[in-house]
Length: 299
Image 1 (cartoon, rainbow, N blue to C red):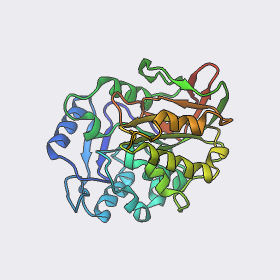
Image 2 (image 1 turned 60 degrees about the horizontal axis):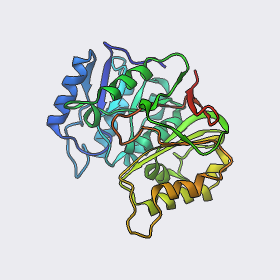
Image 3 (image 1 turned 90 degrees about the vertical axis):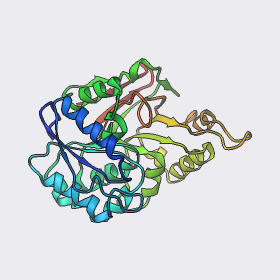
Image 4 (image 1 turned 90 degrees about the horizontal axis):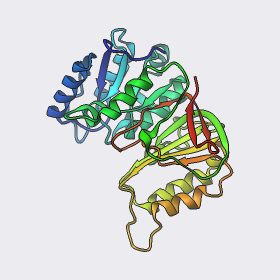
């Protein structure tokens, strides 16, 4: 699959919630100033209930942009909610036969999972046009995104000089999969769920009470997923707070699930609903080295 370089055309799609048009205009201008050409999907400025157009309109843009030879990469404009409504409407044969970078996070997790499962497509858990590149956007997020999109050799994830924490000194490697915890859980047991055997599982979330995070992690545990994976990476869990004084803290929840797990587990990775944000390569081989306290993307 080709990488994204300056001068390429980015197709913008809105697979979920509707978009603020002023922020969209700003994001397009910023991407063009960076040297990219921008092609906007037909449904991006539409509104149907809370969505950016009907399910059929939103999915038509994705199918069309994968088939369009003049579109080099596809970037979602924002998340919100709606991706799961489109999964049965996507043209997986077109997507499989026209692989190109597909970029987004949060609600886009359902699409990442479906593309990996049905098309064996490597995708990017990375910044979105309106969410990350409108207005005075964060340069660290941009620079990491450009670095990852142009990387052909293995590299260590820097985490923006923030400390990575490891529960043990174990080492593990596998294809990186995952995304938003709540969205991932909604796909469990469906035709779009993944085989987690020997994978590195990345998880992040936003705005969920800690007891809900605990419940979702128990669902993964009770399904045996933590036994199947080669390791776990916990990203940003923004505003995931206790709903009552007696609830477990987020750290308590993580400790109860991962402190004694006989797999390498890393947390505090700055990827998810955070600024700056690290871009991750889903489907690429990633190695967790708890002894050296490193995350290495292999090529």
